[in-house]
Length: 275
Image 1 (cartoon, rainbow, N blue to C red):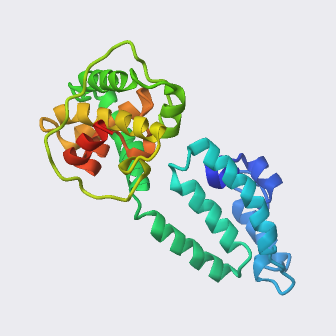
Image 2: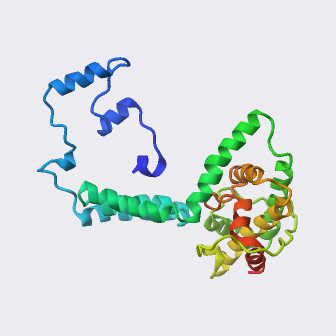
């Protein structure tokens, strides 16, 4: 689970102890070790391909996954579908034969990649991060980076000023850092425009008071970004989105204020600002 859910890295000895590898050999001795293994007349089949293999019962796997699922939901507030999809792959796939289990995984992945959250995170935390680090080394970061971040931080502070339990609201919305409320800059509504899509994410139809407050925080950040969008390339927006996810704690599943602006469009942002 740590490898699947957190991308944990194992040293050679830790991988050996975990059963992830069969042997550890010195550099340059790999072929010798492979030949020695072949000459030992081994059974080359994986455990699940052998006649005596007994897959764990579905109830056993589901019971184990129930606790993991509760932990993930507590940590992520349900905003990140990938960890839950990983649990689904294990829960549905492990009790099956390998081919059937892999088919389940492909099906789950196919549904996952169509969601906006994974695409947002690929755009920002992978592509945006690569661009940011390359341009930082070349000293060619967008000249507007500081001013955009300042405006978004100010708009968040303004939107947060009337929220009672701000800590609870920002955590439920997915912000990973406290929202500073000492620099208020009112967020003006963006120009009216249609968004690109709707996946019926929670903030599109906020229900209770805390959701409405969280939606206003997100909309205020996107509205502040909108004041700069027309003068910036999409590449610059992606770099600044990455900076705001890292520095301001903006929810990574939304990709950043510019990504959220493209997703919602002006009309829906205006409605959320008044939620």
